[in-house]
Image (cartoon, rainbow, N blue to C red; front, side, top):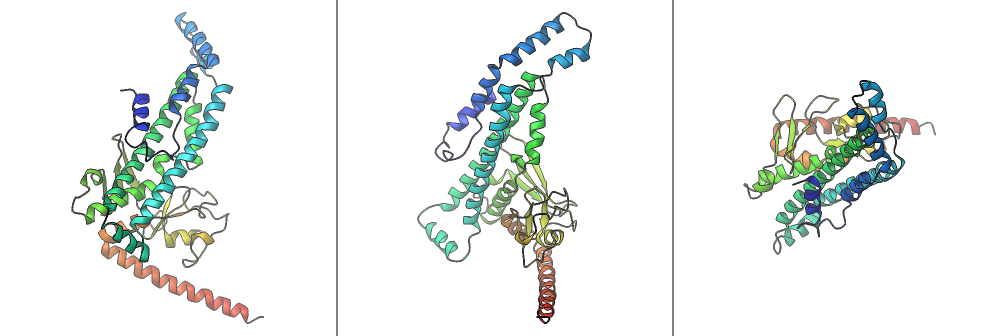
Length: 336
C-alpha cells in the first residue's frame, strides 16, 4: 500500500473522532500541486530530452535540471508546510501535557481522578490516548518527510532537504520533541506498576539506565527506532530533576540553572532572554523549558539510590545558595 493511501486511511480511521481538533499535513493536496507544476514539469522534460540525446556534459545537465526556485511550489510548500508543522507540534505538546498532568496529579485532583476510576477505566483510556498521540506525531513526521522528498525529486533540487534543516533550527523536528520522551517514560512507569496489564503498548518502550550512557528507546508504529540520551551534558551524569530546553537539550535542573546564571530556588523561568544553552549556545531557550516529570518519576523508581543521593546533594546546595543570597540582600539593605 502506498503511503498516501495509508495516510488517508489513518486520517479517516477509528481515531478520526479523537483527532478531529488536531492539525494535519495536507499531503494529498500538496502532492497535487507538485503534479500540476508545469514549470517544473517542462524543465524536467527538457532535461530528460537532453539526456536521451546523449549529452556528455554532465555538469551542464545538472545545472539545467536543478530548479532552485518555483514560485508556485515555494508558496504552497515552504510557508504552508512550516505552519502545519508548527500547528502539529503545538497540538501534540498541549495534548501530551494535559494527559501527563492527569497521571502525575497531586492533592485533591489526584483524589478526584482515583474516584473517577471507580466508575470508568480511566487508566486504560490514558494509555490508549497516549498511543494515539504517538501514532499522530509519527504519521505527521513521515508525511512531511515524504512530501519534501517528493518536492526534491520533482524539482531536482535540495530545497526540501534545506527545509528540513530549517525545521530543525526552528525546533519543529517532530520526532525530537521532549514530549515524546515524556510519553516513553509514561509507558515505562505504567509497565513497572501494572504487572503487564498494558504490555500491548508498553512493549514498544525500553530503557537502559545502567549503561555507560543511559538511554531511553522508543519503537514507533512505523517500526522506526529512536534513542534519546539521558546524560546531562554539563555534569556528565544521568539527569536528575530533568528539564528540556526549547532547543531540545536535556539537563539536570541544577546544571541548567548554573548555565543560565540563576539560583535553583529561582527556577529557569528567571533566566534572562540572552542566557544561552550550554551545548548549542542558542539564546532564549529557558523561558519555555519543559519539566520532565514522568522521566524524573522513572529515574526515581528505577535508580533509587542514585536519585536519593542526588536529591540530598541538590537540597544541600539549594539551602547553601539561598542563605548566601539572602545574606547578600541583607548586607545590601544596610546601606539604605
